[in-house]
Image (cartoon, rainbow, N blue to C red; front, top):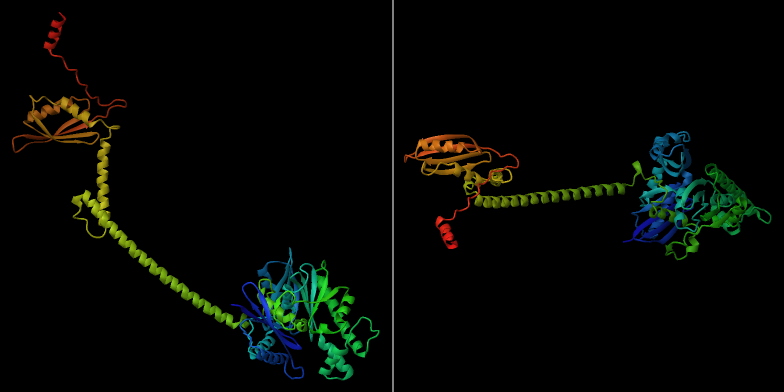
Length: 561
């Protein structure tokens, strides 16, 4: 959907309105209107301008959501300051103090804004604009009485610089934009599309008309018609009639102000020269004025062409070409906001209320969205936590089921929360016990169990001497325990003495020797196993070769004989 931007130029002679539509990639001037101000009324300038604006808005239904207007430069003050630092925060902090030297009024009674023209190595050039708050309130009230609540309120002399975004002006080099209006002449000095200097002088078309009024005792309307019909200015007064000679007096006064503006510019920019002057405004219609300016200042002068490079729907563009510039510049201030001069009096206590309300609505909407995101996040967390707990419970049940298969004796005591953890602890304990037993059976570190059994069997008394049954053989790496049964106490002593003769056993001792219910003698033998030195192991006895029977040898001898 296209965005509508309205630019309003509250001039001294008429009110001009430009309506511009901006789409995603382009913009177009769709309408322009002008309504003269009643010069004979006793209304103030603000009231007369608001009345003319009201009439103009009744002719055309215009959406007024995005409106930019200008404050007349001759109703406020502009000043260029040079500061010996470049820090932006420091500029803002010291600006009021610097202005106190030039302003006879308390700063609390003024509305002040500024724009940084240039920043060099150790110097900043700052353009300031300030207006009494009481006057600005009257101006704003008059606009609102006409149904207009502007979002942007700038200065007409400064906002003229925005026309350079689309006008046929040099993209490089220094030039001046000169708007000759009804009561004043605004001068903007530009370098490409950058504003360098601005000044407003109180000479305009009204002063040309006023001199004819006094000279010929005419009312304003007749003097204006006389100026348009017979008026002409020139450096040389030869051949000029009485009307033109009177107009020449005002023209020379205007040229004097332009020279002063040029000298003020050179004071700040000594190395820069004006290459051209581009004229606009109703005052440029006076015959011979552009040639007189060019000849006097020795500078090329041309009319500002601002409708050639923009799409528009104006039915008669040539008839409004001179007066459309300033209202069109107001709309371009919104279009090119990133490049525009930042002076806007709708700030602080005079801030655009719909912006504040919109900001409040945006904050509320943002709060609602954040609340919704928080609720959704909390719900997602609780749901995820619930799912995780279900998975943990299911996993615990599976762990209990699988471990119970391995350790049936632990199944009965493993119920309720934490049962899987307890089972895993029990399982780890069993694994540790098994690992110890495996370490004990490690052939690379301990004597072989089979070799120990062979050594015990070889040292054990013969069956003819003792009868013994070994019930338990417990070997833990460096200790051996034998539990068994013998026929007598004497047999137990024989077994102890026999095993004590082995070089692999030390500290052979009997324990728990007692008589059983069947008259057998139960006993336990405790033996310390001696670790062999490095390179030695328990040698397993080799089997003796079987001897051949004597009869076979005798038979072989007989065969040989």
